[in-house]
Amino acid sequence: MSKEIRDRFTEQLFKAVLKLENVDECYRFFCDIATIGEIKALGQRLEVARMLKNGYTYDHIVEETGVSTATISRVKRSLEYGEDGYNLILNRLESE
Image (cartoon, rainbow, N blue to C red; front, side, top):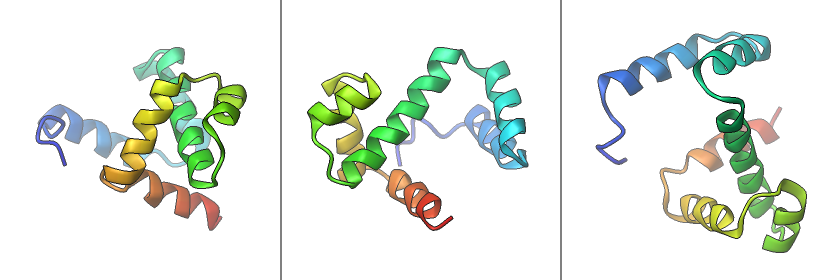
């Protein structure tokens, strides 16, 4: 994991997220801490990861999500060479 991300502010943020108890609390917290655009971009990236994992083409992903091919490439790189966070959460979401 990149040492650049690890600091006391990020640690506090992640601990705060873990304190959220339901989707409504997530909406309330994230709407206060981030812009609508930032939240939507994160949601799109998760969907891109899901679609890549399920074998969708770049063209189909662009059509469905509206993201750029550069974003798709970044997500794909994270899926293949990242910290395995996308796979961790996608597997948990699939098992629900």
